[in-house]
Amino acid sequence: KAGVTQTPRYLIKTRGQQVTLSCSPISGHRSVSWYQQTPGQGLQFLFEYFSETQRNKGNFPGRFSGRQFSNSRSEMNVSTLELGDSALYLCASSFALPGEQYFGPGTRLTVT
Amino acid sequence: AQKVTQAQTEISVVEKEDVTLDCVYETRDTTYYLFWYKQPPSGELVFLIRRNSFDEQNEISGRYSWNFQKSTSSFNFTITASQVVDSAVYFCAEGVKGSNYKLTFGKGTLLTVNP
Image 1 (tube, rainbow over the protein chains, first blue to last red):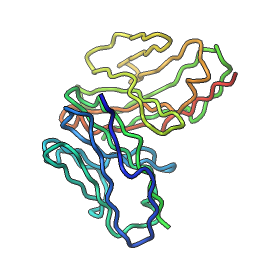
Image 2: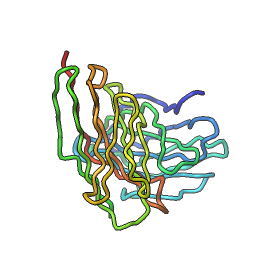
Image 3: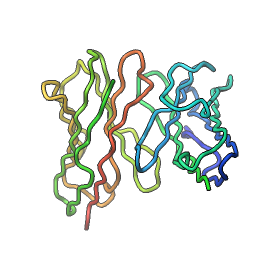
């Protein structure tokens, strides 16, 4: 079974731009979560989607948004990029067991 | 609010040594889940174990073992006879009932196993 895939793997943007990251979960997994990983703050939860509905949300500004499609694929969008948004963005999918999430390789976003 | 503390920022051992990674969690919930993940240099987090708050049995999987003690709010991870391939950052995480898909992670412990 194919794992979680994320595209693109690397991205360089400038301040003020917006970016869209994509995540394809493991086949059959309906829950998709997003995390931001930075050296200073570590791994922080962004949001979680299940059946196209956002079920959980972390403490991030409204510039961070996401959505999930009917095939469980998910996208997250960051508008008006700031230097501090530079991070590794990880997507994880889950089938049923709470929290047993399987992570993708991440998208490394650099904002200049 | 949940909080997970991994006091050890970095640990360095020589191959074949045993090493224990500490994890202390804080929660007011009675139902919660604890996890360990491994992040090798490639960056992809790898799920290692899930334990729920009602199951304090220790678990062993090959060279890995986990010690869950509710009395001290700890969920420690031991690698026996460490190998170079065990070098990675290890994260402890917690999820609570009702928000089980939202994990709170510790800051991680960088384990370096030297040959």
